[in-house]
Each structure stands twice: as structure tokens, then as C-alpha cells.
Picture 1 (cartoon, protein in one colour):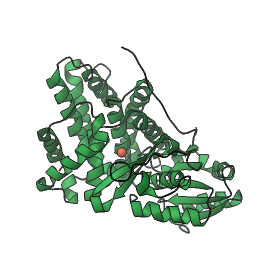
Picture 2: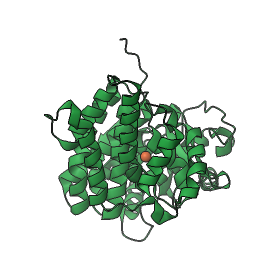
Picture 3: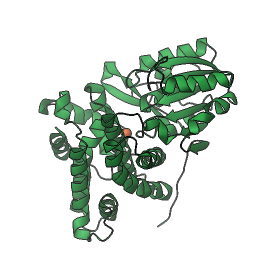
Picture 4: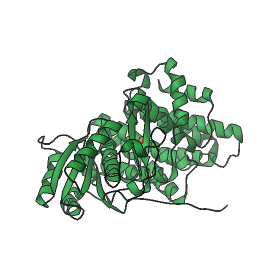
Length: 394
Ligand SMILES: [Fe+2]
């Protein structure tokens, strides 16, 4: 067997508690005026936005605050881009969850190009190729989830088409990913739970993806065990610094893994589900993960009882449960059961709570098949299997 791969990440990853204190000096090296894109609160609430703005001012950086509400749409990106252009921002700081980081990423990228998001968006846009490096930008995640600080795509909603698509290029990667696990300490339990499930899901989908490669596998194996142990603790006690640190690492690893290996059916569904129903991304991922893992393993076993990928599903069961001694004939089932119990323990709502009904399954399946993540699923799932997955999550 030969091994060949291509690997991208942020130019620099600064990880550690208290790292936010370096935001001012790091940003000052990139520009005199920064667009601060955030969904981590609002100016004046005494929280992390004020702290970040204060650090930037102290370092002599002019700050234009742009609040991103919810997951970004094409319109949101156009507005943020107009603001950045009109204030002649030379750099962008993304501070918050995946929605803020993806908005900052898209703006950083588009600032270095003519035109707007629809010119470059894949699937639903003109799909032109980004050709210049993004305006140097800094990603500061405040929730441990999407890993957007190290991914090369920004997920953007197109509400008119009921779809989410990506602006994608390695040129979009941030100059610096500044990961301070302490920023997540004040994140509420429900957000911690669903963001953490997104990270765990991304690690698992990247590990079993058709695009998996040795570097991403190593990160995924480490991250899966870390998240399985730390997530219940971080949700039960937000002040648990060790659990927060493990989740920040798991999320970081998940971003590096997914952007280099691709994902799978869970994320294939997540884009159209999130665009058509008011379901947070992490909630979709959490509810779909156990049935997708079970369906993939079953479909691979149906192809061949000795399918080489089945060994990864057995490893997954051992990593999740922490039981390295699990025999081959029990490991996959034990992994699925672990995920089922975790989703219940974390009180993740069902997709039916957001209005998904059986009559909505067929259009969702049709849209999921168009999504780029679906192509990386380790096996092609039938419509019947995809329907059973949705029924299980409702
Ligand atoms: Fe995700």
C-alpha cells in the first residue's frame, strides 16, 4: 500500500490558558485597523468582546466591531465585507464560535479579492477560484466545537435555496489560530454540549472518511478519546479547567482533521438540515452521529465481512469507551451504544423538536446527496438507510 497526502493548517497555532492577552500585540503586527467579527456577546457587556477590544486599543489597533448573529448568510458576509472595505481594515479578528470565525474567514479572504461571496461560493455560487492569500487574520475560538480556527472553508447559508455552501480554499486559513481554553469557561452547558458533540463528530467522520490520511488519523485517535472523557465533565462543571483544555484540543484537532480528510454523512445532512430547520449545527451532528456510525459499519460489513475500514470502526469503539481490550465482535456495537448514551446524558434535543417530520425526509436526503461532505462518507448509503438514520434522530 502506498501513502500519499496533502496537508494544510494555519501558519501558527498558539494554544494555552491566558493566551488572549497576546491578542493586541499579535494583531498590531498585521494591521493598524481591525474588523473584530464576533458572536461572543456584545460591546459593553463586560465580557470577552470588551476584553478583546481593550487589548487591541492598548496595542494601538483601531477596532471596528461587527456582530454576527446566527450562522452567516450570503447577505451577512456582504454586509461585513462592506464594513471592512469602508473602514479600510487591514486585518480581521474572528472571536467566538464557528459562525463568527467563518464570517471573519470569508471577509479576510474576500478583502483580498474583487467581488463578493456569490462569485466564489461552491455549489450554489459562481465557484470562481480564490487566487490571492487572504488578508492576514486571527481566529480566536471561544467555544470548543467547530474547529473553524483551522479549517479552510467558511460555511455560508443561502436561505433562498434552502442550502448552505462553502467558500473553500487553503488561502483562507488564518495567519494565527489563538486558542485560549479559558475563554470557554463561561459558555453555558447546552452550548458546551452541542459544540463538543460537533467536535467529536468531526473527529469520527474524519477518521472514517474516504480522505483520511496518517496525520489526520493520529489527531483523530487522540481527539476522540480526549473528547469522550472530557465532554461530560465540561458540561457538568464549566469551571473544570482540565476538561475545557481537553475539549479545546479536541476541537482544534477536529478542525485540522476535517479540513484535510473530509467528513461524511452526518455533515452531509447537517448543511441542508441547518438551512431548512432552526436546528443548531451541533445538535444535528449529535443526533445523527450514532445512527450514521451504525449504518456505515453495517453497510461496510454487508460489502465484505473483512472490509479493511471495519477495523477503524472497531478502534473507534475502543477509543470511545476507553476499553482497549474490547474483542472485535463487540467493539463496534459498544461504540455506537456509547454515543447513544452520551447524546442522552447531554440532553441533546431530538430533531423532531425543531419541526423535522417524515414528509421532510425525502427533500433533505436529496439535498444531502449534493453536499460535499457526503462524498467522503466511507460507503454509499441507500435512500432507505438515510431515511432510517433520520427517523432514528427524530
Ligand atoms: Fe461540524
